Length: 133
Image: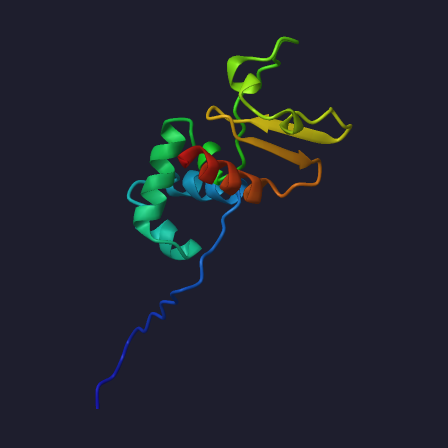
């Protein structure tokens, strides 16, 4: 019979979501002593390669951006005179402003109108699909 001195159970399939604070804490812990990346990764239940990626992002000052937060493009407030792309749209496409509502006009002329309670992740997916068309 074979004796096992150590048994590691590796779970797969479930994705862990790390908060920005957790990532920064783990990265700082990995710098505490020399050669601590693998040990720190094991203690915190992540792969060493993931921790190396976080360290690289932290050195570049981009760890906050890697958190997956929603990002928005800069807005442009258009003049009263409609642009050429707006003139090509049918009149019913021009919706009057309503408080709490946002109208997004994409580069290819697509318009997305959302209320202030829109799910940002869903909106990002819709905009991404429309930009590809």
